[in-house]
Image (cartoon, rainbow, N blue to C red; front, side, top):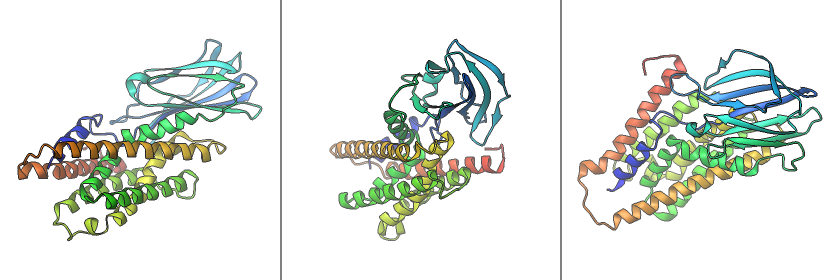
Length: 331
């Protein structure tokens, strides 16, 4: 019916239809001796392998003693250096040039020589962090929650999977059960992966997430009652939710959380993911209900377009991610 407009809105907001995760940048500062810090700056790479144009700007009292050439990992560029700061980063402002245009956050961790640590998160709206040695709150509660919200709302493939679930399940109670099953499942694997109980390479997970959307799109094309997804939607949602949870875990594992931060950071991040997912589901249902009131008869080809659009996009993602996994350059 009215689904085409929603899918087109999703596609137009996809940041070029290429990115899966809105992974944060991260800056790890470890004090090795009084006033001297090792700095590890990780910034996500965009399609094609180039890193996002974001750079940290340290206080004027900080001097770079040495730096190593940047090195590329599977999804990011890492730069290591050593700093000497006369104030010891006890009361310092760190800015991030280029962050407002990048639309990603940056997590800043500082580990002092005496064992005290701070975690702060800069955002495009506020591209800086203020470090104060005596700050009582070591974990940025709002930052981790916002990181979860940004992660789900910036992950088009996760949203497209949830969107397909909404199209699949019409009954309100069944939809609640299905979304709950998806939530429980990805919460389980998110916790297991972040705590180190499960270790799965990220690239195959991303490719399989694309396949999960393609599977749902194909199931939606089959007559009702003749497909597994419509007969057991909660089972399909739970099974693929386990897979999507591994994808969510990539955001936290890429940041490299300190052991002391993991329980609270994991909880806050997951709550942010759920808040973003609930917001998305609410908006989609509200728009669908509003458009249904128009009582307009849509052409058959227009009714089928969302399924083909979702399947085609998922198929493109799968080929793209497999090409990166296998080292191809053709896609």
